[in-house]
Image (cartoon, rainbow, N blue to C red):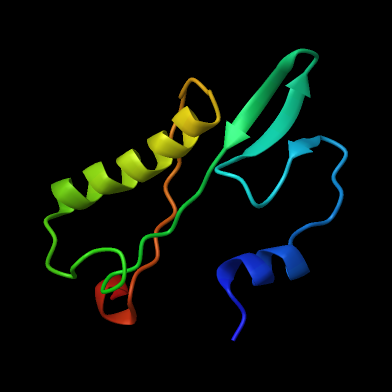
Length: 94
């Protein structure tokens, strides 16, 4: 069985003209203008693996922000915006 990092290395490590630092770190660094980079991070938390399915939405939102903000801090970045990556079970999506 391949690890998460094996899969990332095999399928997602292609050269990119604007990528200063790509997969494998806490965040990707994208050159947006001379002397400035964007640090971009996305983590998906999965019910039953990263949190209990009965976790209160407020607590889950706090955890999601904490995980991604710590990635930004590890890169020395200053957070400006957030994005949301949401995966719902079929039951919740109806």
